[in-house]
Image (tube, rainbow, N blue to C red):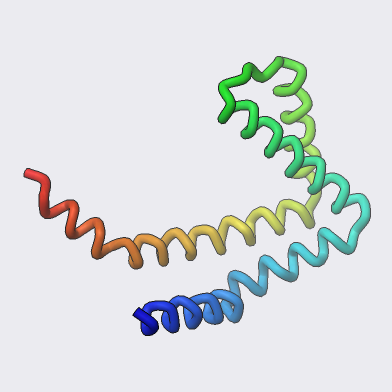
Length: 116
């Protein structure tokens, strides 16, 4: 059992040392170091979280909220630093998803073999 945890911590270290994580960290620090970018990014994240929360609770999202979200997304897309941050985040997420598929392969094989 301890070996699995050792491997997990090794994987954590590998992720921290990866080009994808370093690129994300650099992009994040650049955005956080720019007051306008930081404010825009935080507004984007807040808007995103609010809408997700409403959706999860089954609440209706007003047209005004949709329009506000659209405007915030437009601002984010126009800001080069935030766009770079989001691209870097997407690259790291792809790697993590691939790793997750590798890690869960034994379960998929086990349960997959029961079908049919």
